Image 1: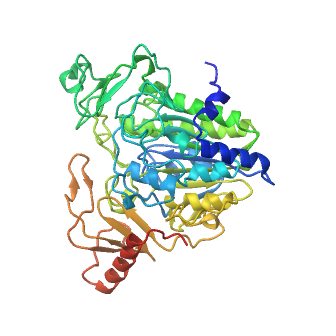
Image 2 (image 1 turned 30 degrees about the vertical axis):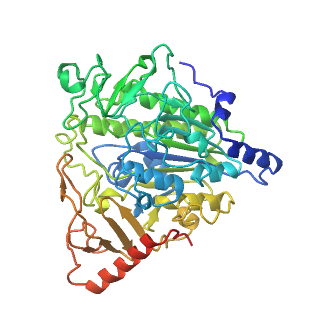
Amino acid sequence: MNRPQINRRQFLGGIGAAALSQAALLAQRPPARRLPNIVLIYADDVGYGDISCYGATRVHTPNLDKLAGGGIRFTNAHASSATCTPSRYSLMTGQYAWRRKDTHILPGDAPLLMRPGQTTLPSVLQHAGYRTAVVGKWHLGLGNGNIDWNGHIQPGPNEIGFDYSFIIPATLDRVPCVFVENDRVANLDPKDPIRVSYRQPFPGELVAREHPELLRMKYSHGHDQALINGVGRIGYMMGGKSALWVDEDISTTLTRKADAFIEHEKARPFFLYFAAHDIHVPRMPNQRFVGATPMGPRGDAIAELDWMVGQVLETLDRNGLTNNTLVMFSSDNGPVVDDGYQDQAVEKLGDHKPAGIYRGGKYSIFDGGTRVPWIARWPGHIKPDGISDAMMSQVDLTATLAALSGQKLPDDGAPDSFNELRTLLGESSTGRPYVVEQSGPLAIIQDGWKYIEPGRGPKINRATNTETGNDPQPQLYDLRKDPHERNNLAAQDSSRVAQLRSLLDKVKSETRTRP
């Protein structure tokens, strides 16, 4: 199959007027030096212990191991939330998602969380002269709340700083099950228009709970609505048959789009946000990865993700871009095993520990919910085989990459993002002075101590069998002696509780924490 090409008209078509005016200014002020290319590979639901360079033994990730061996591996790095949409929002904006009330896990037809003109990670790099692209999972909303899936879908990624976008609108288990390229559904037949509803099914369309005999992947909880490609989804959809993705081919499709962007823009600095769909449910890896591990679809999806990473690294090598490209890999939150489908993830887990030594996982305020892999490689700038225990947060990427590209943030831009460039490059072991984590309650970590504010709700997420960390009483853990968060010291050390609670309250009350 021929490698897809990026049409220049499409490439520019989604850019707003503000971005175009910025581009015109940049054309008059070309960068004085060649800036490094930046590739951010952002995995979905990959836990701290899910890849072999972080200790996994039942699954092997040679490409991620190679990436780590060529750069630095962080052991105290955090997504800003234990769920996807809030983490992605913080990553894109440099603002804590909990400052807004609408940054929960979004349905597939939610409006765009960011506004055109807002300072974002891609807009900062775009202003610095980068060509910018997002390929993969989006899940940050589209449009203004009433999406016409058959026309121009705006605003979207192209209106907040991306020159090119090829996205999964929400998640694999939510409708619509189509790709959106720039501002239109890819491969849509106008004679078969798409309709989407998160309230009620469409007459005549298959519903998973009514046709279990047609399921190729049975659900364990939820996911009993639209039946598409033999899989039950969340929400209902009709039409768009020619545009539907094939679950087993998503990795190939996304990787080809990512590779095409790199090759198309190799003559100038580029930023690629490659948001992989793996290992989110439904886990349906391509046939060539089935049986790659003894852990069933979840393990095989990790192997598929590693292949995707390897393909991008190979494309950089083939085009002579490796030495001038900063490549980063991380995940949007901690791991979850059973997240709604009967894929034998629990039965075949064996002694694999998705969160490593850490307690909890996705949906949890314990460290397993937000402590994630973070690898960075930039030959000649980051020493190989590095390991750093400096405290890092993904909310800092906007300020950090602004510093890397020589950009000054506006006063109201990226309000919670710290410049941690020296830490990212391995030049400093200090890291962030504190990290704020989000699940139901908030938590703050400083000097190895973690305070979790009192939280309502169940202590166990019964659907996923995950410890949430909710407790009506405050919790205090000495992570240096108790990384498993088993010994709550709040009653014994009330002064430290008061100190950390005061710091967290200060962060919550301020509109900007960036120095």
